Length: 87
Image 1 (cartoon, rainbow, N blue to C red):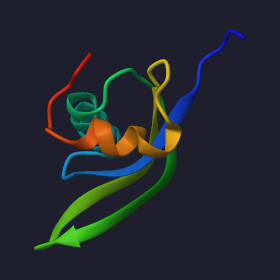
Image 2: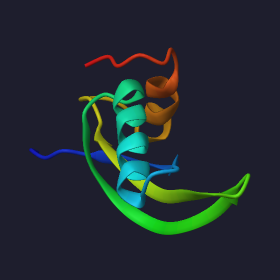
Image 3: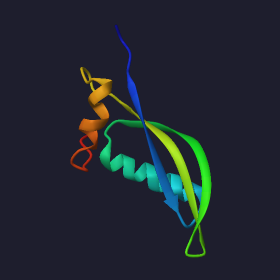
Image 4: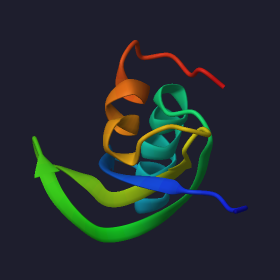
């Protein structure tokens, strides 16, 4: 049987510049930890005030392709360790 399986992980990016920059910050960080990153979905946008300055916050779910034979239950744990991209 052919096909691919993906797993999603929820993350939050923040920025003092813009919502777009908060997304870039989050995706850039995810790329350094998760291999085979494929796409993301913005789930929520919100803002806050940090010492009188605007802070943009974006919750997104990033999806990565599981390696052949990798269990969806353990994939996020294994990929998240070590802090370096492996692919």
